[in-house]
Amino acid sequence: MLQRTLKDPRAWFLLLINGYLIYYYLQNPTEFNTIVWIYWLQSILIGFFTFIELLKVENPDETSMKMNDQPVTKKNIGCAAFFFLFHFGFFHLVYAIFLLTGFSAGANAKLVLITGGIFLVESTIDLIRRRSEKKEGEKENIGKMFFVPYMRIIPMHLMILVPPLLGFGTSVIFLILKMLADIGMYIATTGRGTSSSQL
Image 1 (cartoon, one colour):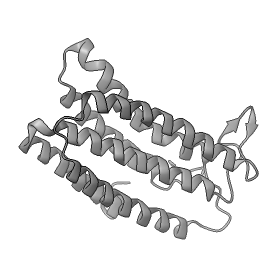
Image 2 (cartoon, rainbow, N blue to C red):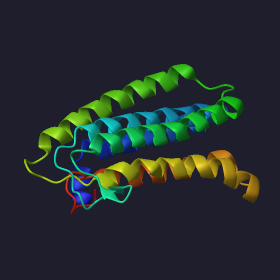
Image 3 (tube, helix red, strand yellow):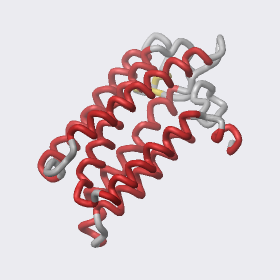
Image 4 (cartoon, helix red, strand yellow):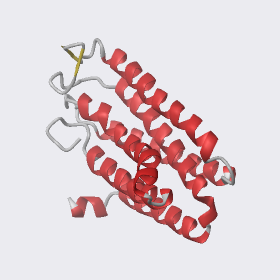
């Protein structure tokens, strides 16, 4: 696992971008709002590319997920994809409203957009690479594909709830959880195509 990770450009990209954002925050402690908006935009892009990938599934593992007590198959994968888009998108609409009311002041919009563009390019390349590497007849684990992006909901929830309850600084909680969520998503999405691998 470690050897594969060290050879994976995605892992290095993840480390570099998170390292830069932590460095940026330490150099500009008044711009925590910028980090939060970058995370939100990155999460939106992850949701969008998950939706695209769900639509492109050709050979779903019908044991990996059910909707309305029925297995997700090639015939109803589109319904699962659009349900994901609506549900994941609704969460982020709520968070956008919350961020606009409490985390908009002083945010560096230029850095948010530049970083978003980098994530867009990286996500596009990664999607193309993973689809091209998919083996013919390989079953795809819809359940893991569907639920892994929700790992990014947890830092947003805890950023709202934990600081007032425990008296911790919002930035400390968020930066730690962001790093953990990114690492968790990388591990979970490595080798996602097969139902027997860790996503």
